[in-house]
Amino acid sequence: MAKRRSKRRTHVGANNPANPAAVNGHINPRDPKSMVIRIGAGEVGTSISQLATDVRRVMEPGTASRLKERKANRLRDYVTMCGPLGVSHLLLFSRSESGNTNLRLAITPRGPTFHFRVEKYSLTKDVRRAQRHPKGGGKEYITPPLLVMNNFSNPNADANSKVPRHLESLTTTAFQSLFPPINPQTTPLKSIRRVLLLNREQSAEDDGTFIVNFRHYAIATKAVGLSRPLRRLNAAEKMLKSKKGKKGGLPNLGKLKDISEFMIGGEDGEGYMTDGTSGSEPDTDAEVEVLETTTKRVHSGKARGANHDSDEEDEGRNDHVERRAVKLVELGPRMRLRMTKVEEGLCSGKVMWHEYVHKTKEEIRELEKRWEQRKKEKEARKKQQKENVEKKRKAKADNKKSSGDAEGENDDDEMDVDEYDSDLYDEDGFDSEGLEGDAEEQVNARMEEEGDWEDEEEEIAEGRASKRKSLKR
Image 1 (cartoon, rainbow, N blue to C red):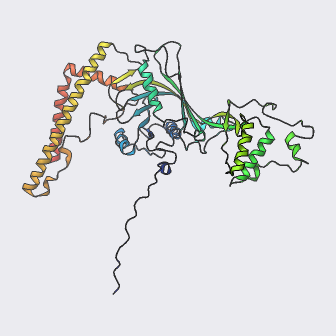
Image 2 (cartoon, helix red, strand yellow):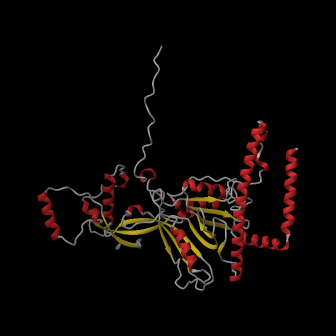
Image 3 (cartoon, helix red, strand yellow):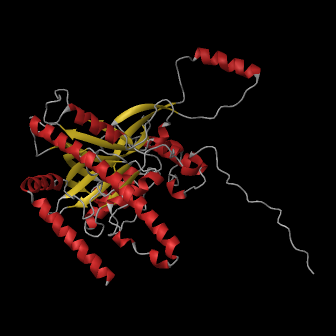
């Protein structure tokens, strides 16, 4: 009989690296994360779907790039997963019945929520078609973009302006929190490959509009101060040293007698061209000095002393400084966003600012009283719901003990208590335009004053009773 094998091997534990960047690439687990979602995935259309995909590319790497929405998914489903996944921002694209495209920027888990109307937009593919030499698709999306915001604060604004100062600071903070902060002392320049520009249009008159232009660029650099032949030789040298060498990048010197003819552009030097002497327009936006990263040799003591003496003689001159031209190439998409509404909670709650609806101080005080009353009623309902759930659980347990049958395991249809917070989200649908909440609030207040709610409560009670009778039959 064969000898039975005794298991001596144990389970190998997870070999987690100490550096979190080894797992997530360039992403820190504490960095903000976002989800770009289409509300009503099959109803927004192909253009809005492609716009949402382009915005996901802008938000990389800290976003859900392969998120798949379904028609049955609701806002509650995404909000429930924000906590376990560490999602801090939601960008919700939707389309209203009138055909308006809307964008909501919500900060989880408690808000606020900014409602924007997308007045104009251009997709990434449209921007690339308009360019002669488009850029993108490389390593630009490995690191988050550099956020540049302009004109978000008006020096003449105060608390009584149509666009108050606290709203400007709140909007600035919300957009800044989309991406991780950058430390100029520790962040390497090579990691900054993209720029996200948000420019607010300042109106000549204080008309109460808040319009933001959304642009996305890639940063391209090029060495300046060199002739074109010398630049081609430098590029060919780097290409030969790299692992992936290409023969097509080498200059053709077969028809020339000497390298000098290639450098001066012919026998008479008539073909010598630089950026200044060529007929093309300068394609640089700015020139900066960049310190080249070069490897240093370890010398002995005597050689080190000789190098120190030579460094003192050549003090003030740095041979490793290179002048490079910085150019921005647009990647897309483009958007013109118009803020229409700001809510206190996550896609719900008290309206903090509205572009079209302006209320007096008395109306604001009345709304504050209503919200306080709603909060008290909500807490009372939660408490009552918990008590009802505990009572029914105890009653069900007692029935199981007394009868011992499986009849106690009925469906939960008769339980009129929702385990979720039913007051936080709307079950029927979403406010696609962000303007239906005010009209609904006015209708509810009017019905409450006229006493129509009592008739509806009786109808709802009768409907529930008839439904239970039909289920028992």
